Length: 460
Image (cartoon, rainbow, N blue to C red):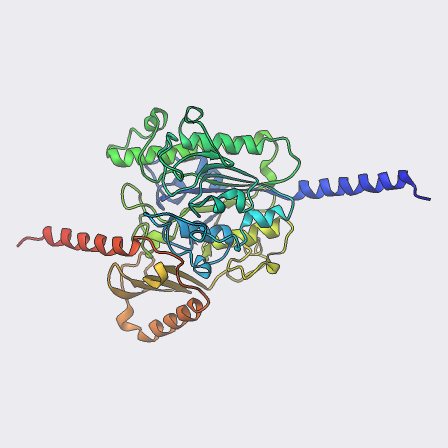
């Protein structure tokens, strides 16, 4: 005879165990900025832009001195971050086409598994807030990519007041357009939405992908943030700085919310930029280059991680790591097994940060832009850069020359051969770009203008 009391007790016990396991899983927040320079934060030595909240958070965890993204500009970098795979594996080398109709084949394909989908399998509730830029077609929006909740805009750029321009420059909550009168300043609005998601009465752990569009153009700021950067006399830099300061103030609000709700100790929080600083107003010093380039200034970004429960504070980490590493790091921390996921290129960072693994996460990292129009490889201390900007294959020893001032390609042909072979072996596992953008044309145009200015500056 069935004992109902035993069945009820067993059911209750299973529910309690599930609840306890859910509470052990860390909450996870990725805060991604857009086109922010290396020196646009105090924790990397910046002095003119006030970033006290980011600096304090950085001191509570690990700052990566060689934290790279997998691509030098927006959409492909985001595709790599969210899938944990080099975006060239699935042909996402370029931004969405600037002109013409888009379809569901242009963007990160649904066949690629995102962090959000992997964490949902571990019992997480998931939210995408801010800039998407991984597919302009509605079939590729966040609700189709493992996100329970979405508040943001689909396209690559957006004014900061939330004024709708077209389908992809419109703010949506899930799939419904948000009335303009409900929006104030997008950096503030995105933060408020994140706080609402954090404080929602739900026992599940959460994953938030908070992708601010700041400090991407257009340059818009409120009086509050402009007041905080009025000491910067160069107007363009001052406005840009106000946009960065707005991120800092709002990250402080998120941190305070975690503290107030007793969540901070078991929350993993990662901060990084999607690529190097933009060509105007951003500061990538001391690195060479900017967004779009495969010099360090285009691919090495402000980057830190905190997790008070598991990561010691006040650390810096010198070995190179990649945004690709976030997927396996998060999944393993959530109780999953990244080793079972399909061909992840990232590495779980926790064994290295905890010093359990004394080796380095990566000896080699690769970059491919526009199907190989430009490419780079860093292998140990050597970095090869096939540069369309300079119309030459460059070689640097980053141990002796971290600022990439001295091209040594003419002195080490054997290293060039070795690194090119490594790149070709890696690229053989990739596919051709699924579409193209104007990046290649813009590179050549920019370099020609740069050369002309140099010529004009010399005495004839």
